[in-house]
Amino acid sequence: MYVPPHFAVSDTARLHDLIERYSFGLLVSQVGGVPFASHLPFLLDRTAGPHGALFGHVARANPHWRELAGQTALAVFSGPHAYVSPTWYEAENVVPTWNYVAVHASGRAEVLEDRAALLDIVQRSVAVYESAMPRPWIFDSSSPYAGRQLGAIVGFRIEIERLEGKWKLNQNHPVERRKKVADVLGGQRGDDARAVAEMMRAMLPATEE
Image 1 (tube, rainbow, N blue to C red):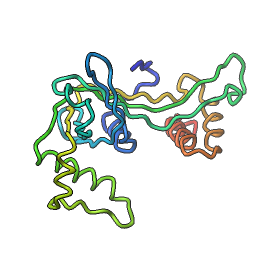
Image 2 (image 1 turned 45 degrees about the vertical axis):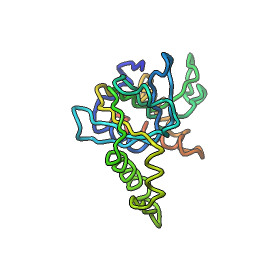
Image 3 (image 1 turned 180 degrees about the horizontal axis):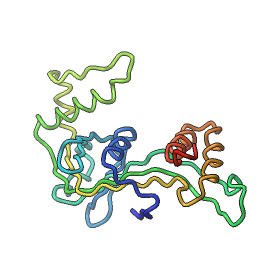
Image 4 (image 1 turned 60 degrees about the vertical axis):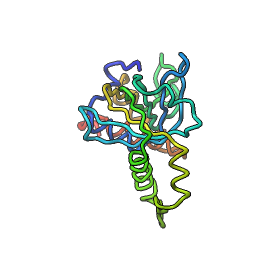
């Protein structure tokens, strides 16, 4: 990922926070010598290795896993994003742009097929994604149905070797322009626009807030 210095974020905890908040990501590796991508929910283990590890699973029918073992795979996590009109700057010699936040995590992939590993991934996934539900669904691992479902998936683990963050939030503009853009985005209806505005305000110098 191209990351100019003024957009770079390297704090591991901050990057992990974004991965967990926007955990439905994109897994990219090679299948048959060409790039192949799967859209998947990921689990993050913050404590594994220097940068953490990612876990997930794909359908056994998905060819993605068949050549995944041993490859350097890339996981892409996209945060909020929003279009920025040059009119919001109220300045000359400016152009349209797109503000966004993204994290790229890459590392060598391991394929997991044993039942214990698959069960752990599924149980942890259910615990994470059902936790906010008013009546969380319970996964009964002892049922025949659960056994059949486990047989229909393949898991993976990626110990993160490289972790990159890009917060492209108008840091290349004067603070006054950044405040104007944040004000406009904060007044829009879309969740992404308001989230971008919140992130922009959080990055303003303390003396300017």
